[in-house]
Image 1 (cartoon, rainbow, N blue to C red):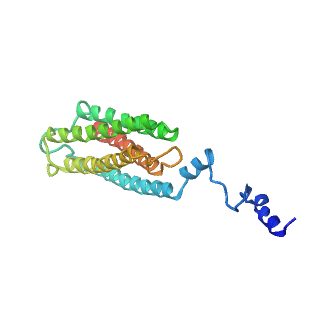
Image 2: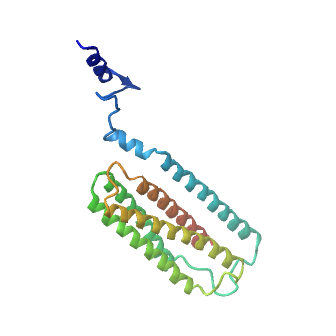
Image 3: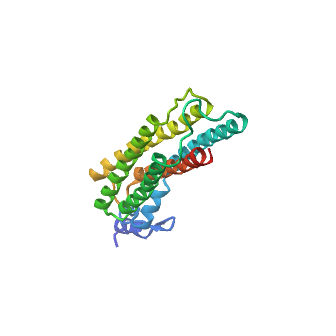
Length: 220
């Protein structure tokens, strides 16, 4: 047998870290669950998780400020108007925002399964509902009866809700860009890191709102 032919056939029997090397000495492309696992635990996704963790610490500091001032200042009511009730726009906004977490997660699951049509619809619905939340918050601001300078409560209220609203705006833009990429066919069942990142960020924004709604509108 020719020596060169023997050397050429050797890579086919080689194993690298438990994975058989192909005839040309190349590792086979990961498929199925292995490739999904590589996507789910990539460095980029961990970077998003670390970013969200830092944002959680920032909001935790804001909540600490709220409760500290609430316990130290006797005149907590706004100078003009009254503290907002949880009924009306706040309750409707909460239902809408919590609904976006459901549509967003189902959109991610749809893309994972290769169901692009369903994923497109759910992503568009998420963007629209996020925009509705921002619209509702803007309408509520016009009906409060007080401004940020009208007492400590008013200032903290606009700080917390406004900062959260900025995060919602960023999330809506992020998801809208992901939706555009889905329509362009840039995501698949094994390649959708940006969509996973947007989902993590959006769920974080929703959880923060639940805390804000409970703290500001119910606890007071």
